Image (cartoon, rainbow, N blue to C red; front, side, top):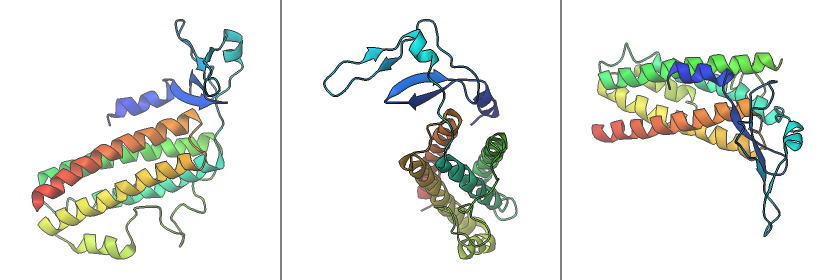
Amino acid sequence: MPLSRRVLLSAVAATAVVGSGVAVALWPDSEPPYRPPSAHVVQPGAPGQAGRTLTDDELAQISPPKFTAADTLFIQGMIPHHEQALAMTALVAARTDNPDIALLAKRIDVSQHDEIALMQRWLTDRNVPTSGPNAGHGGHELMPGMLTGKQFEQLKKARDAEFDRLFLTFMIQHHEGALVMVKDLYEAGGGAEPATDQLAREFNADQSIEIQRMQGMLAAMR
């Protein structure tokens, strides 16, 4: 994803769902809600009943949802998850001359460095620690999709075509784990805060696209 799009994260409105299904456009963090003059916000009615358009006074009382423990654990866990992906891409230059693998690794490296910076800022802005019980360090259980020590050593020892195949196989596994983490976030009741929701949706979209690309590359090698 282009860097310019991610820089816009702190400047553009995100869409959130608040209360009992009330959708409203909100600025991240503490900025006031943005409502285009022609926009209408409809509160869904009970089953079988019509929705109701909220008045300006009602909209003014809606505040962006706050971050939760589920949001914090998601960010704390995704940082080391991304860091392992960067450790994997760092192996590429010395182990393969495949230009397609090199280009893929570069894209992953750039995007995930940028995302780590955004997540670290998320934690700093909310005055929460950079790691938690599920952060994947100090003997804690690895995040979904992360390589085991044995798998990482296998990748380090591989060269050329064998490395290319393992790199794609393990990175697909890694990316699929990130999608599980996003799913788990929402199932735990997280992701209502606009900034967290924006990050999670971008992770999900970016890594889904990269999984498809890598699956195609892997299939072409067989």
